[in-house]
Image: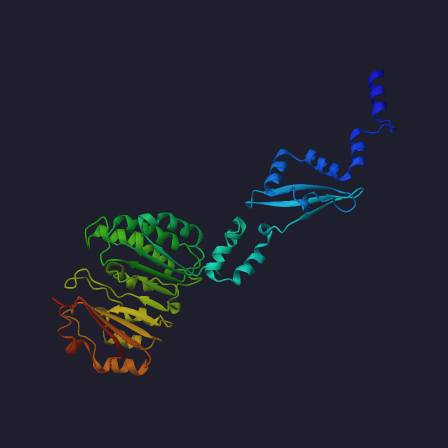
Length: 396
């Protein structure tokens, strides 16, 4: 006990001068540098040696003979480091002087920065750090998206589905309709798009007229397959009330267009539809089923501006209904001419043109081997507001 008490008394003796204090009295600047090196960790000393912390600015003595220490602040949640300098004044608190940390900017400030940039520059700016990247995924910055369905695009499409599918207002899906694998991938994309609460326009763009399914062509198995994987997701979008779908393009798909009447029947707010593309390209122009649309279904589409239909779906009654709509483009595809089709009369076209003087009629003949021979006698009429005529693959 006496020995321990004696040691404590000697250590507390104010007349004893520690060796480090004597050394500080000889050289203050050297002592500051040595103290910094002594208190710093091994990682900090290594970081300072690589970053040039031994420069004159780094070892200069602060005002008042204070102590300078280099501190590295790590923010693993934002993926960046911050260098800061700590100045300890004698008899006063330590003051931290740090450079701006761009990764800690509020999301609102970053959004305001993004709004002043073009889309390519905005994408480049979002690579600053994880925080900036997360801010860019907003509906105001992404309006439309296109899915190119292919095996080599799976990773890209998965990213689009995860980050963009729920915020865009317009989506296009292009796929190889003769490849069953791509058809099934397209069905998955349509299912996820049908869950979006912001999608206003959808375009399905198959590369071929045929849509491959596990069943035979026009078989019950094929019909059920299309109904489950393609028709039901589209009906889910059309039956949504807030916001209602405004545009639907079936990409000239023959088998999907057969459900056009069902699509219009189950649409929750048809008065908001602005564009409908139900025209098709037939796999066999000489033999194909007819998909008819009742005029009252089109009469409800009071905002319709662009409409595409097959010539088989048109008659005088349908044309009288269309003249009540604010159409700007009427696109008609001609394939074969059915024996029971009476055609469109001159009086019906004259009435349509008088009610819609600004409407453009686009007439396209696709593999219409028989229709091209009677084009001038049975199809064309003097009062037709014809502005575009295309004749494609009509040579036998």
